[in-house]
Picture 1 (cartoon, one colour):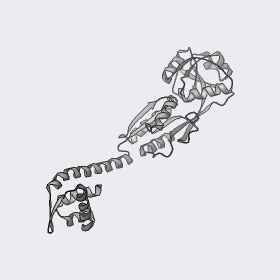
Picture 2 (cartoon, rainbow, N blue to C red):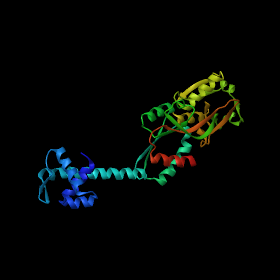
Picture 3 (tube, rainbow, N blue to C red):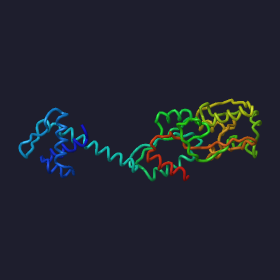
Picture 4 (cartoon, helix red, strand yellow):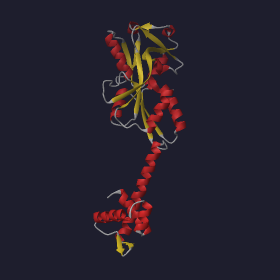
Length: 291
């Protein structure tokens, strides 16, 4: 049973004239008759009684008409919905983001909402490991994270660079260290550190830097919530290691450069390769890349 057959049938029933129905459908009368006959054969019962040049709807045709009309209307509604989706008059955007990139996400969301207020946006903060898994399961449209730590060898992922940000020692503005221009990696051995928990992209990068440089600092606190981590650092009992971008909008925290090593992390949009990119994603990324 094909949608076009239902369209042909409903129009013929409404007009009770094959010739006129075919004309309005821009097909030949023979095509209309053949398709309706094929539909009747599939249903196993006549939909029209044919008497000379006249047609009359049967009881089965009368009953079937309501269902056929509903299908036609639903198909039309679906077509309009898809058109609206393409024109960004509806739809949903699911974005995964690490906390350190919220400062680039927020202005992009505000601008996107101004331009496309009917598109729903869902933002999920989490570790890169957690979000990558959701990306693989098609539960997110894309991630904002760091490209050198989210399964960077995966051939399934596509990376679009945003900017680079160096890892720094994050301390309270009241700390004596806040007055320094920089510190060395070995200086970290004498500091009580509070770091993001395992699974965060930055933590994996930090651990790799420690390993390569044979540094074993004192990690006295691990936490899986970056805002809480920053509050604890602000209180003055701990220092942390995060990208400078993470504290770009924090007045009471200072980012002290760590000299002597390459600690640049590259922020990127991470998505799945060979997956249809929705119009909403394209529009959002166009705004994001301009920020």
